[in-house]
Image 1: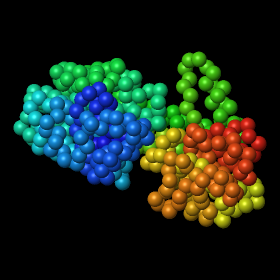
Image 2 (image 1 turned 45 degrees about the vertical axis):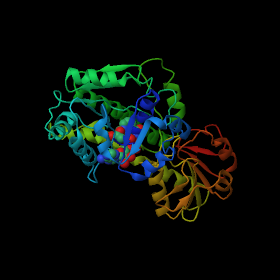
Image 3 (image 1 turned 180 degrees about the vertical axis):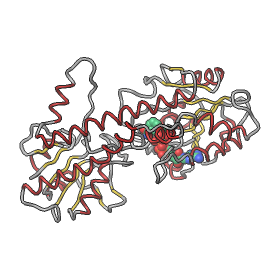
Image 4 (image 1 turned 90 degrees about the vertical axis):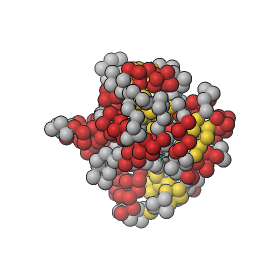
Length: 408
Ligand SMILES: NC(=O)c1ccc[n+]([C@@H]2O[C@H](COP(=O)([O-])OP(=O)(O)OC[C@H]3O[C@@H](n4cnc5c(N)ncnc54)[C@H](O)[C@@H]3O)[C@@H](O)[C@H]2O)c1
């Protein structure tokens, strides 16, 4: 259930192992694309999808799940406007599932969520079917760890953490995932598995915030943060490299930690690291825009009317995912200051909100007063940007050493 960044790769992986897969999504456009053999997830090239498509039945009809041995729930877990967990999609999917649940079926939640969701939210809804979790059907939690765009660690060779509601539930889930994962890490309860995923994401969020805060300081101190990070990373132990940047994007890091901070309030605890990391990372686009203002000012130009071209608008290199991308905030802020904005991103043909379309690399460079490197996609010639643009602000440190470049 849910054929997005998480669900589609899982569907393809099981099909490739020879299993018949029913893929259900409420988004009819996705189902149409899949029926044509067109993938909308960059990690799954359409050729790979087509090679497996004989075994994948993509449908909007959840009823078809009733003949499955296992159902993996991969629906979104976003935040509400008040930054509280929005379990709406998960609750809806679970209700649908309760209506068609079969004795002996295995249900696994893959979506990222707070500890207690599988046991306290999913199980009671599924039990409205009259079947009892752990007795009549199996229920487990196994967080997805996919890192879109990554090729060295895949579903196959990334250890898969999982826990069943009961030992037997865990055994069933383990047997299932052994088909597509080399290493299974069993933990003692769904709550441990749920919190494991959140800890991983909070760890990244906090460390990114820390290096970003230091980057704001090194900017004032006129010290090159990249040189500092490079030097610190030579320590063979006790240091892990995190890079500064324009802020945090994607579906996970800006969202998931707040699932835990919300849950923590029920236990009279404020998770200060999570809040602080969110705050610092949210500041970064403002810092980046002020840097653009200063660089233009030093060249005798106001932001208003200056042609600022952004290179890379998706939230990370190599993918076209715009969700939570700090580039969107930067576009809004520079737009409000009257900048004449354009962008180049080989992965993002158009920005819906701003009405902008990606320019060709040459067109983008030709007209620009300032090139702003927000996301450094592989295959984009950043050296050429550094050479040809009159002014360059590089938020990713990819043009270090170039003459006119100003780093984050
Ligand atoms: N994207 C990632 O890199 C990543 C990594 C690890 C974990 N996760 C987690 O996995 C979950 C899914 O994330 P995603 O990135 O795949 O989201 P996504 O938005 O790409 O895909 C979710 C899909 O679920 C569908 N859907 C919603 N309600 C449904 C329902 N009732 N029945 C069937 N389909 C339904 C949506 O139409 C959508 O296609 C989230 O909890 C996310 O936090 C994501």
